[in-house]
Image 1 (cartoon, rainbow, N blue to C red):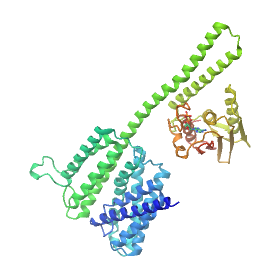
Image 2: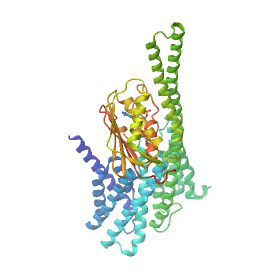
Image 3: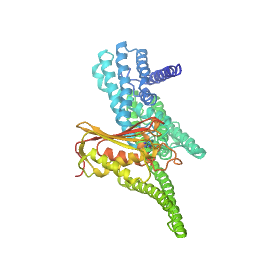
Image 4: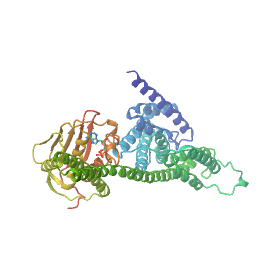
Length: 529
Ligand code: ADP
């Protein structure tokens, strides 16, 4: 398999080259103590690279940081210490964002912006500490300069992550709000030119002084950047902020603009503090605009699906009932088998309707934060047995065999009614997507938690959909083949989360699906009695 390793090597080399070039440029800008620079785009490049390309790209960062620091004259041991700090910064950042914050790259949710801000300042502190200790131990920087070096390092790295990583991530992600054709692109172009001109006027002093109606004030940047965020969401926010800060840094370095001071590192410190505030404000604005847009889109989509889905079974029930009435009127109920099959068909459709209405009702009342649980001591084994029996009783037509395996009572503190809903939703799915093959339900666990699995041997689910299908309205099948709102698993997940538990799926296409629910057996701390 030459392709995989070859592509990996190209990525490593590319990342290494970009890292070294941008780091060298950053270090040209009056680094405090020669190494701690207020402009450090590589921290953002490194974080974005690990988030997009995976943790295995870390050697390019380690080598890049080592080479560039040795190049500008750090003793090898010091360069090694700095490289360790820079690599850990990116690695830990990617880990915290992915694993702890469940970060999505589009930055179009407020929670992702908060996660990025916290992670950037936290991991930059780690890198600054490693770097400054290495410089101190190597006698490159006196301990008395520790404070100022650390501050410059910290701020420079954090800003790199905030401005550069967010730019790369939003443009690589598929979640951002799509741009709409020519008019939008034209507006984007005009806005970009305005931002460039405006920032040049403020930070580059390109307008002759006697023409200046406005003073050179940094806050003049806000209207343009707010425009970018409001109209173009996270992508507009990150590109606008990146362009503005690149020009602002260039201008300030040349001794121009509102932050220019006799000592460059002082000017840059003022500028970077300002850019931190700008970047965070504009990112938050971009994400909240996207949040709102998504909510409106989800509502419209939901209304469209709801009317389509509800109309089909209602129409079918009506047709069946009318056909039966006509038949009975004309010929009496002489052919009971025919009447029965007609009623069964109407019953199936009415049942489908009932499930949809149930989903809709739950949709309005369920939500991890607002689900009020009615907790009592419940034996999950009994609950599952009863639910399966009830589920089987409800089906008029033949359904596949459902085997239930419970070894012993599994008691815990749960909301009985809500858990029945979880079992019911998982069984309905196993029936709907199970191709008529046997279904198996197992209850078990250990003293701390209960485990419930529902397995079928049906159509299965591709791994890329495993997380998505638990979100609202998300489906992995076409509406033409299988009806549904895409709410059943979301409802199940919300209920399980409200109990402090977790739900996941193991499945491959064509191989069936296993849904696994884990529930803590102790009383949830926040639950109402
Ligand atoms: P719905 O069934 O109404 O679409 P759900 O939230 O219950 O909504 O399920 C979401 C999606 O997950 C389904 O559209 C389907 O693609 C997939 N899915 C759920 N359960 C199974 C299963 N047992 N086997 C295969 N795919 C499933």
